[in-house]
Image 1 (cartoon, helix red, strand yellow):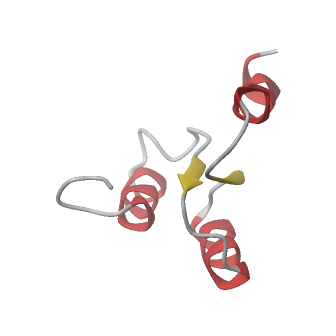
Image 2 (tube, one colour):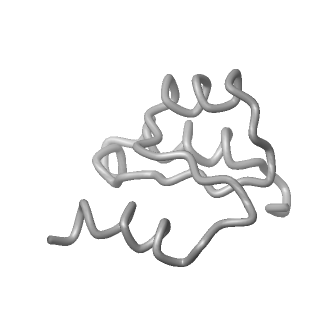
Length: 67
């Protein structure tokens, strides 16, 4: 769990700021609900990975933006 704010609020703040709005956000969570996936997408997240996960899944998500 993130201290003081959740991932949704963090994503909203990143996407609302002119200097950070183009940073890709990958949600990494223990909650696997379709509603949460849709909310993350609406907030601007580019991927939604649930725990437990394999490291390759996270690497694949990040690699899209650094290749």
